[in-house]
Length: 383
Image 1 (tube, helix red, strand yellow):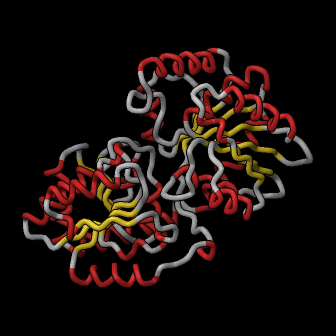
Image 2: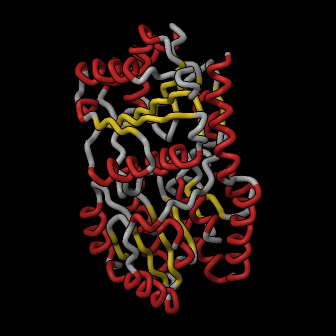
C-alpha cells in the first residue's frame, strides 16, 4: 500500500455519462468508498466535459484517453503503464472487454492485482468480426494461462454461473448486487414541464417506461411490436422511450410504419429520471443482451414493477423478490399477456412495486455495496 491508502485505477471503455450503467456503477464506487482508506483514479476512452466535470466534482483524478478507441492502441498501452507507475497503483479494476485485455497484457510486466468487472458483454460476434475475435481470444487465453487476472466479478449469481459455463472459465470470481444510489440531482437541471406532461398522460393512459440507450441489442423493435399488440387489444397504453443511442431514428421510423407513433414517445437522455420513475406504471426491458440493468434497481427504488426478457441475471431478482415478471426472449405474445394482466389487475401491480422497494431497502442497499467492494480490495492486497 502507498500513503496508507489502497490506490485503485479504474479503466473503462466508452462511458458517456448518460444512460450508461458502467458510469453509474463508477459513481457509486467513487461516492461510497471510504476516502480515508482508498484513493481512486479513472482512465476512460473519451474526453467528455460532462464526464470530466462530474467525476472531478467527486475528487477523483480523471485521465481521458481517446487513444483507447484505436484498433491497436499501442499509445494507450504506454500511457496506462506510465499512469500506473506514477500513481503507484495497487489494484487495476477494469470495466468492459478492451480495458481488461489491455491491462491483462500490461500486467505481465506490472504484476498488479487485476479485476475484470463483467457488465454484460465479452468477446462476442455481435461486437467483433471473426479476425478480431480470434486475436482477442488469444489475448484472453494468454491472460488466463499466465494468471494475470486475479478476479472476475459479476452483478448477480445467475449471470456469473451462465458466463463461467459459457466460456469454460476456471478462475476466481465473486458476485455483488449494485442496488440503488441516489446521485446528487442538484448537478442536473430538472425539467418539471416534462414531468408534468408525463403525469397528465398517466391519468389517461397506462404509462410504460423503456429507459436506457437505444442500441440494436436493446431490441426496441420488440417493444414497439408489443405496444402495437396492446393497442390492437384496446389497452390505452403509451410507451415512453428515454435514452440516446444509434438506433433512435430507425426506431422512430418503425413506430411510424406500425402506425403507433402517437403512443410511442421518444426522449433523449434525461439525467434526473432515475429517481422520478414513479411517473410510470411499469418499466419494460426487451434486450437480447444484458448484465444486470441498473434501471431495475431504480424502478425498485421508485416502487415500480418490471417486465423483462429473461436474460442475464434479471430473473434472479424479479422472481426471487416478486417485484416483476420475465418472459422468454423474443416472445412478444408472452410479453403482451403479462402487461395485459398487470393493466387489468392494479392491486398486483402495486404489490409488485411495494415488494421491490422493500427488498431494495433490506437487501440491496448502498451499505452492502460499499462493504462488498471495500472487502474485495482489502482481501486482494492481503492475499
